[in-house]
Amino acid sequence: MPTDCISYQNSGYFTPLMIDYLNQKSNLRSLYHRFPTLENFEAQLQEKKNNFNNDGNGNKKRETLVAVLQQQYQNATVSDLTNQNIEALKVDNTFTITTGHQLNLFSGPLYFLYKIISTINLTKELKAKYPASNFVPIYWMATEDHDFEEINYFNFKGKKFRWEIESTGPVGRLSTSGLDHFFEIFALELGATTNATSIKKLFTEAYLQHDTLADATRYLANALFGDCGLVIIDGDNPNLKQLFAPYIKEELMQQTAYKKVSESIKQLSDYTIQVNPREINLFYIEDKIRERIVFENGQYKVNNTKINYSEPEILALLETNPEKFSPNVIMRPLYQEVILPNLCYIGGGGEIAYWLELKSFFDAVKIPFPILLVRNSVLLATEKQIKKAEKLGLSWADLFSKQTDLENNLTQKLSAFPIDLTTQKEQLKKQFEYLFDLASQTDKSFVGAVKAQEVKQIKGFENLEKRLLKAQKRKLLNQLERATDLQNELFPNKSLQERQANFSEFYLEEGSDLITKLLYELKPLEQQFNILIL
Image 1 (cartoon, rainbow, N blue to C red):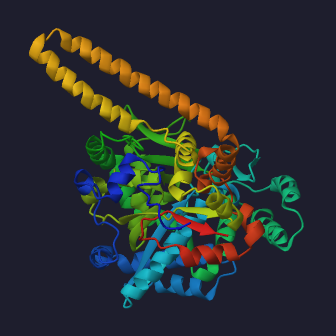
Image 2: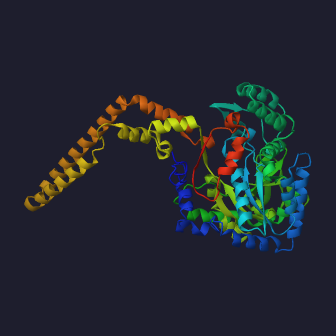
């Protein structure tokens, strides 16, 4: 079976908006800056270089960024390549490629890996194309999110492992205490193989030897990808927020984001809107609080609390404690692009969809809009599964299709006689064309009777098709069950594997070779659904 035959557009798992973006439809052209091609990065890096330094603040931003990263890595084992990348961020010919992800327990779904590997591999391609510049892969940890229910579990071999604990503030500050009991249950599922021992060690060192979810996630990502030079950043930091303070002030005073994003959403009226802006797109955060800031009756109020500020008071708070302000999904991309010398954001379809709402906002605040790249998608399949598919005569197009379509197409393919009566229906329609002509020349009142007869006979053929298909499905039940069982293995819960399974399920069999194979295979600028044989 060929392994590169499914494009994102033909996979059946991308939204109309993403398909139109990938096809560079003209109606979306004003919503992004440059399409992700290797050649387009030349202009992007020059523009970002000029902009990052145009306020005379570029060196300060780079120095602050490096100092914060060094502080955040002070208790970690840092690879030589990651150290080099952090140091390289001090100089103005160094740029970043960034992906972001929630702090899902034990990385959550598989696409955590694919995002980061897409980012690492793109920096390699860019270095080969533009050797005079440096390119650093960045993983932005979403430490300030507060929707704990989205991240407190992962799936392993069809079982859901959930961390039951209360969380009200930013998840990065959440204590990992209590995960030892969770680990005891998970460890029982792993067995005692060499790879199982590696997984247990990784979980233990990440979550049982670090105090917060942010520290645990940094350890995990660094353990998996530190040797590749990945740099991990936590935006929940007062020094980084200080660099962003002018934009926080504008959001409080002018509400530019709301105005501009609302305009862009009108251009996306034919699509599902990913996120809607609020009048103020900021949260107030403390260890146990992350609540929206709202402006009511001349006061800035923290929603669901008794905290409120006058305008002078909230501006004074911004000056002294910028870490108490947290950007929401609309403002976070700007925060990232202000503090990083970033060229490209790599994300899933949902993320790229909300980035497409933001370009006019970026233009208004005079920050270059990054290139938007859809991350790699991957289906992991075993050799045994490939042999099953070949024996059943299934293509990847078959396996990616809806299950009813899979069953119907396979029934058609395996039947000893044709079930599709399209040819016969076309012949029938030609015969009725003659009858329509005859009716119109004799008595036009007959036309309705002829049409009714045509509809009746076409309907008869369609009913016959359905009965033939149903009869053949009963006859071919064994083959169809094997085909749907295989599809269910590859697409658990009739969804993409990468959105369901945790990496540990495959690491258990492959060990570190899993990461090695993915690093070798994934080509981030190719719009192909990768199928990796294990």
